[in-house]
Length: 192
Image (cartoon, rainbow, N blue to C red; front, side, top):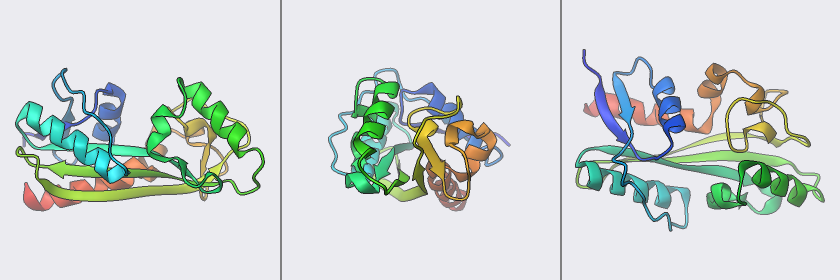
């Protein structure tokens, strides 16, 4: 059976590899949108931004599209960096350093990764919208070389090590993106 191709609204090929790894065996293959994909992410929530990206990818490719918007929400920092996770500072390392510095005065290190996914049809109308969350703690020091973003300082509940210390396989089973994507795949299995 030929896999159904769906545009995944990102310009990050690593993210497409990750979602295809999670979707393996589902009969769905995610592909990059056209190179001109450059949405204006000015939403107020993860859901808003995922919809903006999905709608833009659907418009450019004239087909069904899926987008995610995700970030790290730290309880003691009133949910920061939240939707600004990728823009919290200029580089991944500076973002980690800034977060650890801002968290220094607090004993509470509870945090969660949030992923909102929006699936739209070729007209940009919402077919499904879901949220996936991975709860945990912010580590005092970074550790690990796998993953990207804040993975080296996030310890998921039930584990004694960071996402960046995990195998890609394990991370893809427990991550916020995996939780959200599996909900979308379940929905797609009923409509495709």
